[in-house]
Each structure stands twice: as C-alpha cells, then as structure tokens.
Image (cartoon, rainbow, N blue to C red; front, side, top):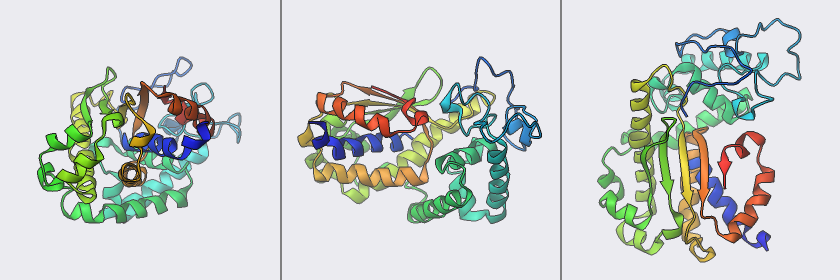
Length: 309
C-alpha cells in the first residue's frame, strides 16, 4: 500500500527537512566541558570538547565527545574528532583566503552566526569531506548569484507581485514566534495549499523570489535578533519546524504542487544546510504514516532523532 505513495511523501518530507531551515548551550550529562564564550579562534582541544588531541585512547573508533550517547551532537563544536578538527582548520583557512562571494555564502546569515558555528554547519552538511564541502559552497554561490544581485528581494511585494497576506491565504507557511528554546518557529500547512489560487496571484518565479526574501530577511533577521539578545546561549542558527498535515490528501500532491516543493527544496538543501533543530509532524494521514515507517529507516540516526510524528 505505502509503496504507491512513497515518491510523493518522500519529496514532501524532504522539503520540510530542508526548508526549515536551536539555540541553547549544548549540554550532556557526561560532558563537563564548558564551551568558550567566544565564537572565534577555537583551539583544537576546544573543538574536541577539552580532549587532548595527542591522547591515544581516542583513536579511529572515537566518534566525538558524547556522540555515542547523543548522535545529534555529531560534528558540532566541542564534539569533533581529531580528523574533523583538522578539516575545520583547513576549511577555515580556505574561507578566509577566498573571501568575497565564497565567504558570503558560508556566512549566509551574517557574521553574527560566529566562525565556529557557521563553519561546522557547512562541514556537517557534507560529513566533513573537505572536497565535497568546497564543491557545495561553490554550487550554493552560483545558486545565490541572481538573488544576491537584488539583495535577496527585501520587499516581499516586489518578489511576489502581490501582498504576502494573499500568498499565505493560499499556502500557510511562515515563521511565527519562537519555541521555548529560543529558536524561530516555522509552521507549514500543506493540507490547505491552493495551487490554483497561487497561480492567480503569482508565478513560480515569484514564489522562489519570495522564498529568498523569507530566508534572508525574515528567518535571518530572527536569528540575528536572538543572538543579539543572548549571545552567550544562542549559538546554533536553526529553527523548529511544525508541519501540520491535517486535510492532506494524495490528490493535493499534484505535479504543480510537487514542482513548487522541489524548487524550494533545491535552494534550501544547497544554500541553507543544517538549519533544522527539530521537526514535528502533526495530524499525519494514514498514507503518510505508513510511508514514514519506511523513510525513517533510510535516515541516519542524527536526522531521524530530529523528527517526531
């Protein structure tokens, strides 16, 4: 039964994960290491959570401090392996050497994100494989080029060709408030998406321009605001995504609908990686729940731990 719906529900879930793009100090019961107050200039032992890089007990099987107990800590500052830390410093040197558009892509939410947090976010996206990370940023820089020339469309009306309220009436998906942890809260209700109505008020190009506006002027502003309020605790530029699937039917996942999802997903997966703190799926219909049991088995433990159905 569920195989019939697998392609569409997989794409819907992929869009939700990538679109959402935390923010408290990291804690682990077994971890007594205190993160440095500065976001810049970390030493190798600090990236490894206070571990002496020369300590032979942390060999090839070591996954990072606390990672075995909590997979979501993998690749984050304070939880790197020696090899990952070495890759970090190599990447840092490349970013500073290239500068310009390359560096702007890495610090897509602004320098406020902080060196160690921004760099590790991109490194996690390609599992600390250096060449893959560089290729990804070069691709993201190319994807951002046209939108960057227009400052990522600061006026939503110019982007859409209509008032944003009209767009939200056809497809409620927006940032609204903050979770208890301080992260921006993103809510999406694909079950009441009206593709025909969207075609009346805007175009696919307008939707994508508006998407750039949301990520670079709405989401980014919220992140910077939270960092300014509590720079000691708000470190990780992520959000909590609530996907309400109430009233979602297979007929709504039409070619036009999936085209919108696919285009947005393509931008987010390359230009805004590793920006999901957690995703909560509400009111999942039976066809989605059945497929999710299969999809979950394909995800790495770190990603699966972020999703609740």
